[in-house]
Structures are given as structure tokens and as C-alpha cells.
Amino acid sequence: MKIESGEIILTHDEVFIREDIFTNVPGDERPHLLARQCQECGDISFPPFQNCLKCGSQKDTVEKVLSNEGVLSSFTIARQVMPGFSPNYILANIRMRDDPTLVLVAQLTDVKAEDAEIGMELTMVPKIISRRINGNKVVSYCFRPIDPDKVTEGEGGQLL
Ligand SMILES: [Zn+2]
Image (cartoon, rainbow, N blue to C red; front, side, top):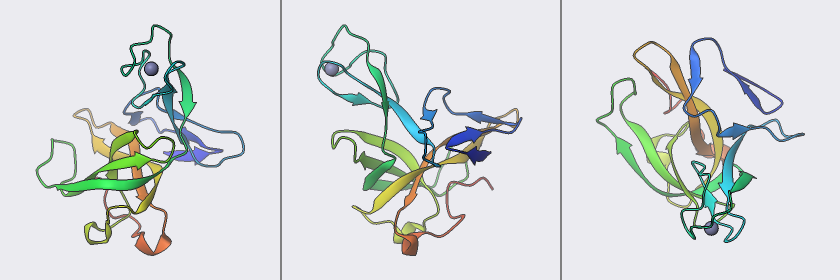
């Protein structure tokens, strides 16, 4: 995987966890998550839904590029994991800056468990989170601390 002008370019043995969740923003080197937003009540859904689950509007939701940033709301250490995942990853709820009711579930990366703190500011980074039976590596969205003092490069979110 490499990133060029915010676009994620995969190698032949890598796949996205979902095809429709990453996008790039002109002038921004970082990839962004692509959510959807209700045209009637404004609710943001991620993973994206075609229809609003909150108000039940009949209008299709529209694309909404997320800011990438949020705060750590809660987390747990996943010691027993599904085949293909590395054990002891940090599974977190991240309250997104875009909307305080929007909470994403994702792995934390580049941080030690003892440095994870509720309320810490996080930013999204794409990472390989698992390996499929056929050997393909799965690229998903992870979050890492914004504070460089909390970043431990390579900690978490990596395959064994
Ligand atoms: Zn709605």
C-alpha cells in the first residue's frame, strides 16, 4: 500500500475492507473516510448507508467526506482474536469531530496500550489489519494519536 495525493494505491495482494469508504480531497495528502449524510435530518452514517436509519427519510443520503479526526471515547484490548488478526490489538470507539453522535469502531495503531487515554485526540490512518485465508491483506481504517509524544511507530494494527 502506498498513498499518493491522498489516494490509497494497493498492491496485488491487498484489498480494501470495503470498496466505498476511502476518498481523497484535492490539496490534502491524507486519505479521508467517506460517509453518507441524510438530506433531511443531517445524520451521518459510517459505514455509509444509502438510506437514513435515524429518521427513515425516503431521500437517498449524500456523500460526506469526514475530517479524519476524533477523540478516544472508550477502548478494550482484544486478546482473543479471529483467525488472520494479530492478538492484543486495541479496539476503540472514536467520537468523530464531524458530529458528536458519530462514533466509529476501529483499531488504534502506533500507540502502546498504556499510552491510550480516554479523550486523546486521534487521526485516521489506513493500515493492514488482517490477512484472509487466500493470503490477501485487508486494508482498513485505523486511528493513531495526533500528539507525537504518544506515537510509537509500528505498535498495534500490524500483522505478525
Ligand atoms: Zn435522516
